[in-house]
Image 1 (tube, rainbow, N blue to C red):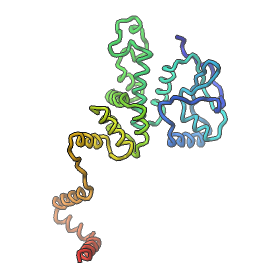
Image 2 (tube, one colour):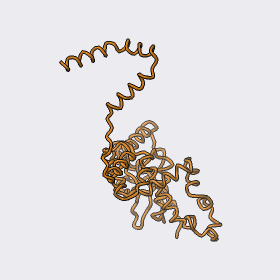
Image 3 (cartoon, rainbow, N blue to C red):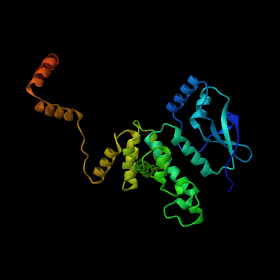
Image 4 (cartoon, helix red, strand yellow):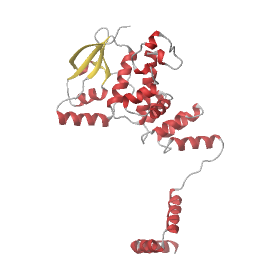
Length: 287
């Protein structure tokens, strides 16, 4: 297999660049942040990376947000580093590392990118996979640090994360399908690492699908709540519905009971007019 070669650095017409099979869609927030930076500095700090296929077609490897920001700014050309003899796996690894190292990503995208990095790296270096041939000459002479330490540890060092965090992210990201990603990215609230860990622990495909759908639709405030609802329904038990008013009332009573008399007097004095108005309204309603 040939080694990927940086053929040239050049300005490339934006309309000649193909964008396909990306791990995540570009975000408006990311694009707007780049546009603000470019407007302030007058330049785009980093070039994008392209692979040139046979026939001359140029395909984006890394820099989706940079490319879209340039389009929205009305640019016709963009600075690019153009590579040849590139495999799909090598291109994917560059895309992953470019995002992990430089992009502001949420928990969902970070989990997906780390899981993809592990999968692609082990395809490129099968001797580093768990159970691989660690006595082989190829393994002994492998200079990349991935071959002499665990993937999680090496990735943690590379991107400034903890080993435990990387392992949790990989575990969560590796269990998500493309349909899961579509639903979770449409969720009204950002999906957290805690949510992803709950999804990863689902004991069946039905439970997995229920939790993902509930988060995507916004019908559950967290994956833990969605999972508890699924388990209760599967067991024939009606899930407990919390009453926020009742919860607030109980919290107020508990605080009142613990408060010293001086604090209670001050509370009544400061809220006297509001309490009188509420009492009068209650008397009118009862009449």
